[in-house]
View 1 (cartoon, rainbow, N blue to C red):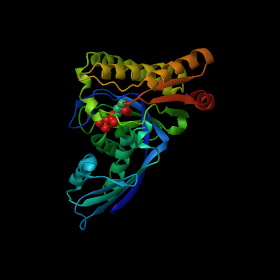
View 2: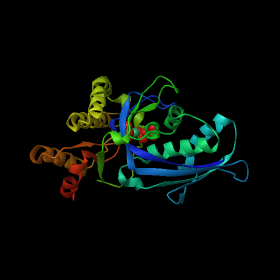
View 3: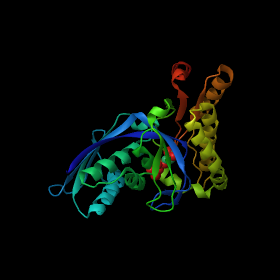
Length: 304
Ligand code: DP6
């Protein structure tokens, strides 16, 4: 087979991946836990050509990528080519069903779909764990998007052991991620650049040291579908990660005034309206609000 199409969901991390132990292999400093988003996904078709194509041709959301925009994806295609020992070129067509500026990570779903489609089209028979390791090389969080539901990425010690696995399938717990788009402007520093800065923050070691307990709590909260247990821990880790970002050298400040406005509003709605909703924030200004089904409607009413 030389052509394959795969769909992968993006994910939102409850305990964040922030900081690399090995930048070449994308080995993280800590385990992370996420929820794969069922409704925000990337669909990618990879078609390998033994001849007739001079370079890889990559089209993302109907736009053909130029050499510099395609470089990271071409590197990933090189990894796939190296596994089989071929120099075929690929035609890649990829589409997100969510806007790139929505605050939903497209690299997670994008590299997961590219990995699985690219490997399948080369005839590689790799299990999901091996594919997770391969996707991780493209983008760390993509290792988690190999699986639906609730997923943990074990930091591991080498390429083979740094892989994700499913904690529970999506059917285990219907949680929602309501994304509040504070700004659609592109970020100044990509997460790839930020990961190498984490260790320059004096707060980084403190965050890492506290994570064993946080990870245990998050696993227990997911096991028992307990949002009241989950929520405070995910808020704390998002704030801890942003504290590390802000105190890195150079400092990364992703928040906008609107970010803080939402955080304060959420805490007020919880305290005064008893609305069970909790926030988390990735490497950007937009806020992800995590809640259960009955909360979505009253939450949207307040947000609007
Ligand atoms: C803040 O996986 O996007 O979203 O490996 O450089 O592609 P690269 O980084 P990426 O980093 C994710 C950072 C985060 C937290 C998380 O998703 O765990």
